Length: 360
Image (tube, rainbow, N blue to C red; front, side):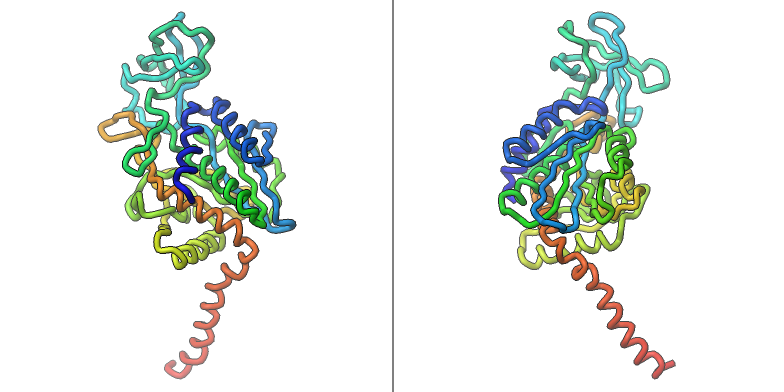
């Protein structure tokens, strides 16, 4: 995968601030990208974006899932012409909310600062530096939207716009190569406050029961994985273990890519730093696996309680897209690839039945 494609998509998305329930700007950018590449897309009744690429006839569907939102402030009500009461939505520890931290009121890109806490429901005062021409709907940390330095992408919201960019890059590549495949991208809303978009979509029952869902995330770097060492096959999260056969399929595909190319890298780990959409989807009894890339400054939380940009390694993201492209095109070989372990174990069983009685 050409890293320029990844970076171009990531930049377009990450320059569109969002918060839970306020994903309109990156969603509109997703729809513009789909139109440019002639990828059919639509919104469901909950505002999730569904992007379809169907060239595989009755081939088993692959569902790639990622989310648009990032932790941020939802404006509750005005206090005065330049002061607003806002509730923070998303997972950031209390110690990071220090008065005076720069924030950005949206829409309008209005500079502001975080004020004091109001009550116990994560309510804060936000003080604008100038009058707003219209009612702000949400606010985000005042951080760089997007930058590339030293082989990494930096920005306020790598989580999970890097996942969204990876879905789009995968579909664009499958479209370009006219691959025989059946892929649905589910780009959801309000993940940071309980997977609301994913749950609402899954509960509709519109997904074929034989779908294979692959959840895409950026996940806090934990011991056992290293940023820069490739895409991570995520065997589980803090809450769940994902489908072992589906994970085995991704592992076989990844191992095949590594044999073909010396520069392809992957890792396998239980990324237990948080709970991801894969847990939500598999509760609806659909086979689910997950992949991710290691994330720095998860949810903008840096050392010493500082709010800073998140970052990911560009080559890790490229390897994630390459794995997804290969998995989508090899779905017709799913049974053969996943049965390799069973065949190997059966051979060992035959040897056991032959040899063990001789030494019993």
